[in-house]
Image (cartoon, rainbow, N blue to C red):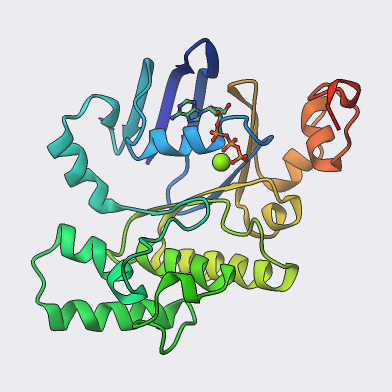
Length: 253
Ligand SMILES: Nc1ncnc2c1ncn2[C@@H]1O[C@H](COP(=O)(O)OP(=O)(O)OP(=O)(O)O)[C@@H](O)[C@H]1O
Ligand SMILES: [Mg+2]
């Protein structure tokens, strides 16, 4: 479904993705883990063409989206839903308008039909009577739910989630995890989830991939990744400051 081949991306002199290869399986939940600042969001944005690589191919159903013109890219984005890090709702729009946005942009549906879909998607993520509210009136967990409702508004084949549970309490985080799993089951979409929450990762993943130093250094079923021999993978899973990933003596903390 999605294949990244030899992707290289730098910002100024900083190389973020360095010859990265990754294949995302159709109809599964792939969770990408890795350090803060390691390039996870940059990687996800390549999959939907928000960032173009300097080198390499981003194949979505065989089409290299890194080389599509803006019109074709916009067309292709209809098959994607994305929950951005921090939800990224439009603050000046109501919740209902936020969820309706992709439907207004990409379809010719009548307002009444759009309203019905908005209600249905909000219910699907467990929200009732919030369509008229402003995002600023919602809790963090509710904002993520609205972001998810907006992401699934067009019934996308591919859903990208950038840290859906970060910043939430464990119970709300678990509810969002379940929502991700249920949404995937319900829609059979191909899901890519970015996380640095280990508990959440192993709860929801069919496949776990770890990004480190600009490359995917480990990928496979959760159990295989858990028992990886790679010291960086083990350090990340155990969550210890000592190891190859970074030396805590060098941190200014
Ligand atoms: N548009 C941009 N311009 C310049 N530098 C950028 C841009 N986007 C990302 N970066 C840099 O690329 C690196 C990776 O950023 P990215 O947001 O992908 O990290 P991340 O793994 O998602 O981290 P976190 O877990 O904290 O969200 C960072 O050093 C960041 O400063
Ligand atoms: Mg990020």
